Image (cartoon, rainbow over all chains, first blue to last red):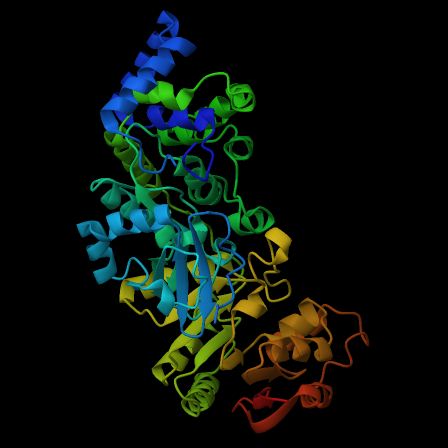
Length: 62
Length: 468
């Protein structure tokens, strides 16, 4: 997406796993959200829109 | 005038490297320049510049750099005299390089800058000291993004180190065969059944390999937006730092418990007399001192004894090359402990030096193209090349001539104890050509002999030669 290296999905999840207790908490939340269906396309777009409104356009996202 | 672009620097679209004389120039795109300016404003950057962990760098106007004017920004880097690659480093060198990568990544992260990659090719050795050379690697942290360099760190630092430390599999041939390093899956296969209960190995190798194969379909089909999901689940820089700290602990506890290798006690040099060693040292010192602060390439350097003689006699740098990984690793650790920075130890089989590798075979030049010394030392090597590797004299001389430098070469005669031992393994008559007159004829085809001296024991002769 932004970086010139593609971090594979597995490696990205591993990043959280290797990131100690806080990282594992992120994984738990991620799977919990998946179970609740928080990541439906509609929901995601809404979340990204509001994130964009809040942060402005991200610097490398050109 | 635009300097030639470095053929190894094309991967990151945000910057590109050009080499010109004593300097290395880097062109930066708009985003690359903004990234650099952010990093350059940090204390982490100033500290790393001050103590030499980062290659000396200054920002210059694009118009003053020999690069295309389409770049938004330009940097000038100090040029290192020799480029080396991880497949020529020892275990401890790769380990120190890994720790430097993590050290710089963590200190930058604390100030909102992330290293976008983590490749061992971003590190070079300035003598015996690792230096990070890729300023294009630092970018502004994007909140919620995972560290894209994690996989690369495992492939190019951690897995090679694991292989050597845990399975005693040398990593150099593997890295030379695969510039992308050792994938988690392959590392998991190679380390299967070993150290089952070691947590860092489980996480970074086994689980990493399983996660990759489990989510390979996701990568292909873009099923989940894992990046977005991680962000929403609260992923942030604290977790990246914990991940890097975890890797740092894993690297720090790695140790290569190698048994003695063939040459590891060679430093004792039982077969030499003290007088021979003194005469040899004087010859090498004289040859070095006759040149102006030369860069010396010591082929078959073993424990680095004559590389030390060369730097003490005024050489600005000695590249100490030997095929014995363990001996070179000992040398590296000794140099680090002493703070001796003028010697760069490398692992290399002289009968099979590093070829040109990578994209169009231009990305990573061959050893002979990269290492351009002023003086070559080739001591106690000829009999190994001629007898153990059965390379003809003419070929050996041609190889030495490839460096285009002055040469000090030692020829052990047939009656030298070491040469006699190697000859004793051969069938009678097959190596009759191994003698001094034939050697001198071969040498004379490509070099002018300026000086020669037979050592006090009378079984070895040294030659100082100029290439023709």
